Amino acid sequence: MENEELKTTITALLPSATFEEDGEWLNINIESKDWLPFAQQLRKGDSLFFDYLFCLTCIDWKTHLTMVYHLSSTKYRHNIVVKSKLDSSNPEIETVSNIWRTADFHEREVYEMFGVNFLNHPDLRLLILPDGWEGKKPMLKDFEDPINMIKL
Amino acid sequence: MVEEIGTTEEGDLIINVGPQHPATHGVLHLVITLNGETIKKVEPHLGYIHRSIEKMCESLTYRQFIYVTSRMDYLSAHINNHACALCVEKGLQVEIPPRAQVIRVLMDELTRIASHELWWGAMAMDLGAFTPFFHAFRERETINDIMEETCGARLTMNYMVPGGVMADLHPNFQKKVKEFITLYKLKIKEYDELVTGNIIFQNRMKGVGYLSAEDAISYGCTGPTARGSGVSCDIRKLYPYEVYDKLEFDEVLETEGDSFARYMVRLGEMNQSIKIIEQLIDNIPEGDFQAKTKVVLKLPKGEFYSRVETARGELGVYIVSEGGSTPYRIKFRSPGFSNLSALDHMARGHLLGDLVAMMGTLDLVIPDIDR
Image (cartoon, each protein chain N blue to C red):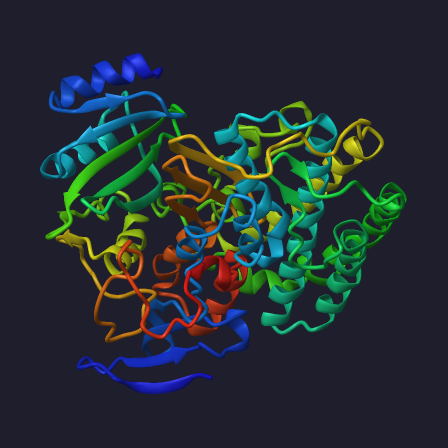
């Protein structure tokens, strides 16, 4: 589907979604509370069929965090980017690991690196950081490593 | 090595494989729950070689950060550099000269062959066949020599830069590559004779580590891992970059979804890479090897994403720019990380000894997973 068609279909699904088109793909901004039902519709919808989550990450904007999901359809070959702002004092969003299983590992990475709490995640534990890691999350902008001798 | 760390309430045995284990090819740590010899669960514990490359890149300029990325998937160093260069070029909107495009594709394909050669030797060694390792390294060494002449390095090339390539090809390049093609065609038959047709090898690979097409997509598997399950996911075909759309080559697909299918895909890919190199080696256009770019690169505010096909699958580079000379946030979507997440699903119900075959055909490179 082309961007215009995608926009119409997605607006019908979620009227509160806003769009940005300056990037390579259609960007969709949504509220974090809408994410889980919206994700299910993206995956299941016959004309959408976004079955491949090829990138899941988070950006720390200092005032807030933004979750970024890059989705693709292996059937129709269209791509979209879904973004959702999270409150940096208590970042939480529903997990999508039961929809796209690759999200399991990627969400665990975001959890330990950015401190985002994925609600209903089956196994939200540290993946990369050593057990018992405490303190600031490493990928946040205000993280300072106490033993790093080379200041970056 | 493998040490027992306890039993669960149901009487299942929990063991560690790694982080120092010859079959994990690096510092991968797996905690495995076993019932007798049957695997009930595989839990990867990562981070033993995590260097936080994404964080480091936030303080490096667009010219500097490429050098760090050679250390991610060190067997596809060229292709990693390529992905980063492509992403920066997307932001700068620079067209690179035709000569540089062809050089890049040639280097990518040579890298792919070298990487698959190493995989082939190492995987056969995991399954108990030591000789193939030497056969694979004999050919791989030739590629490393070719790389060394042109790039000055054998492993971490850092040859592709925003705007083109670092230096022009060495005068011997064409001659050496043609010699390599002749050598390869002579020796590739030995690969089948040594390993592929071996009945013990086939028994250990067929039906082991089955991954359905749907699961492969759901787990985000790419590269030969997904293509072994019949998922068409070759970025070179789907979203062509450089001159791939003008080349004739096939996407190698197998439908069985087991370890043997993944093995056959990689062997097929080496032949396709040779096909690509043969098409290009006599047709390298004359001209500049680098486009003119500014000394200090500044990307406009925005987001840029590039995708390339490494030897292991789809590598994505996601740059978020605030308009400065360093990226605000950079994310590497590494193929190994997603491929590894399917291991638990694949391994359940199989014997512990088969885990080595599965890990072998996933072609894990740990620095690529940890980043």
